Image 1 (cartoon, helix red, strand yellow):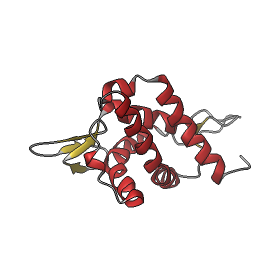
Image 2: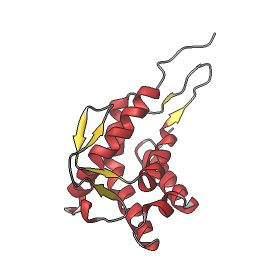
Image 3: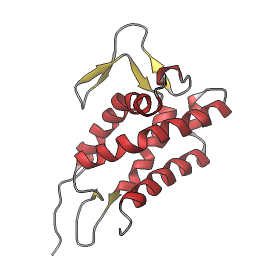
Image 4: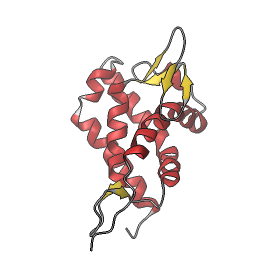
Length: 152
């Protein structure tokens, strides 16, 4: 008999907003840095704010899609379909744990993304098309996951 789990699509949409809204602060907390000065990673709105529909928040900045998509793609490591389940679920126990995990790995994802953007003249579009960057992001999430959950 197949078990039905709660689908995680809504969580993924909320995670997209969460990453955009929180990643700058996570980087700045760890490195006492000026994340918004990272041209090629962050876009700033001259007038008004970017609206994040699923979180209900507004911010004057966002992560460029070319920088964001590899980060979001790396978090697919946290998704699994357990035997007998009809839907995908998080490897972690809850969406709150997924966000907490992201908070821990975010500074490293930003740092790696920024270094990759420097190779491309701080242009985010080529970053999002760089296969090696996608691979590095995924491996960063996997290594961080296994360092905290060695028996899984």
